[in-house]
Amino acid sequence: MCKGLAALPATCLKSAKDIKHKIGFLLQKPDPPKEQKSLKEKENEKEIAKVTVVNRVPLAEIEKWKTSFNNLIKNEDGRKAFTSFLQSEYSQENIEFWEACEDFKQTSVDKMNVKARKIFERYVEADSPSEVNLDSATRELTRKNLEMCDASCFEEAQSKIFTLMEKDSYRRFLKSKLFLELSQPLLDNKPCSLEKKGKRHISDRSQCLPSYA
Image (tube, rainbow, N blue to C red; front, side, top):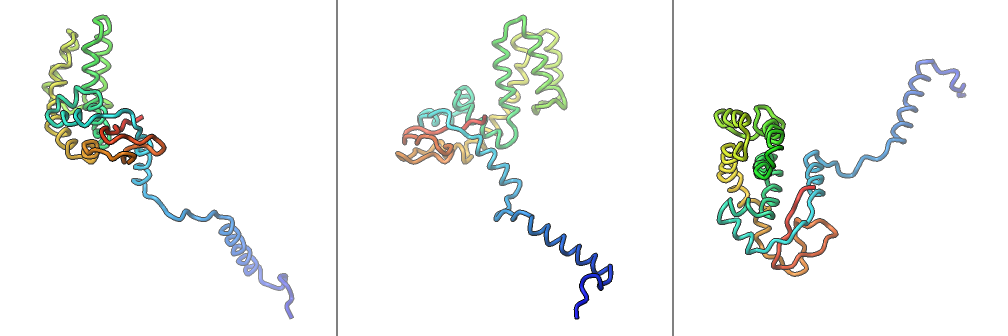
């Protein structure tokens, strides 16, 4: 006959308790998700969630962007589209610096020194938070310009970054999925693939333009 648990060796009782504890833990553990998403997929979802429709861009205007980088960057919608592309390449510091230089030119004289120093420390100085790709000679020239600060303080540096974007990023932008989709006419009631879920449909003669919040 069975003499009960008391008749079992202590080691057996301990093993039985351990097994019971593990089984109880597994029963309480929530079921794992059916589909484990990679870190890259999660990051992509976050980026997609930031995309919103901010404007309607006529095809005629988009066609002008193909003719020259200057037409693209001088157009507000063009800069937004180009900035979105640069963000996808993690090189938005170039367009941010260019825009900071444009804004600096409109700065009143009494505020130029402070603003120039901030721009230099953020974009131009070596190892700065958003350092742009400048040669050492241009970097040093810009540093000296801070001593006699005026509207042309960043002229040379801005020109170098403009040329860099024109010869590099701009060419990739024209071949990017973003630009190709913007360049295609949309059918009536067909939502743009960049259009955030829940927004209105875009007409066939206009394009939806993404912007990052």
